[in-house]
Length: 447
Image 1 (cartoon, rainbow, N blue to C red):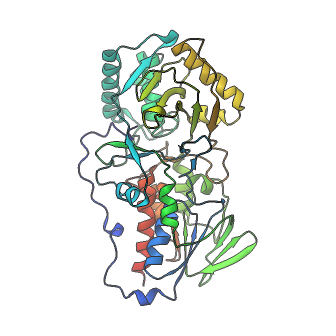
Image 2 (cartoon, helix red, strand yellow; image 1 turned 30 degrees about the vertical axis):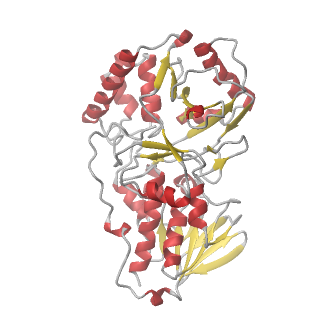
């Protein structure tokens, strides 16, 4: 499951100096300095761990009853279902690669070439037709921005330039699963910035024992207070005061790592109000929705390929299946997805309605005699009050400087981390991790 595969021939990516460990500072200077971190996702934990190692007094406030944020694994069906991040997107040079090894996370290479596609009626899509359309799709992605405009969405410009593909089901699949999945709603996606963001090379590897092994590892030895919902950040005085569950805590520095969706929802009151540039960035950067569904059966009825593709009339829903059995041989399970508005719509549907729609697709692929699943797990990221979405993307009106504005510290007391603050690696777990290290370094450098 490759992120932004259309960025061709990506070179070696060098980490910014702020990511590298600070040196030449007497750590005894930090012993009387305190830091409050809002959010125990991977960015908050990365920052907290680095600052604790530098002998700061660090406390992490987490609204949920566990650490991890969007790195959340559900094991209720006997295997780890990663509700958020599942893959290490490019293992070469990716900081998650070594971190995952340290955390004991096991992985499996999901072969992007192991794929079979079905059209309506279960008609197989030929390998050459699939490959040729895929190549043409990437060609379009490389050239479309030259026709883009600041006020036009990707969808608008695509339909203007390639109206012949508007009703092609295979093209709709590629637009949905190879673009919407990685970015956001195509009717909101910038027609000029849709391919922004750096990528790491190497294999794509999926976590097999749970991506949450990473936050659990990072949280070891940290002072993490769970079930602490932050409602106000007051940075008007010498110390920053945080209101959580009716209690006020204070510190020399605060790092806010909540998702962009939470900032958009104004779930936290800032006093004084955040600078205008940051408020504009919060408004302009998009927040996508991707929901995931894991279904299990007593026996497998599907093809022995890593990915199963279906090209229905509708877009963005239940058109791509990950064969979980390839990396959990004892599990007869498939994972599928819903994106953008279709993803949000699934959150209004009952489990029975969701299963009925998924099974309608699978039965068109494999016949009416296949059984209903024995169980299903699902996500509802758009309505989750701790996220209000999946990850950030470059919407119409977004400028790349907005990601930098989201990362900008305020008064050298209030700091911000999270995937939405990483201009090169937004929307990724590795971007979130790097952002936490970046903000920790900023605080260290102030001493």
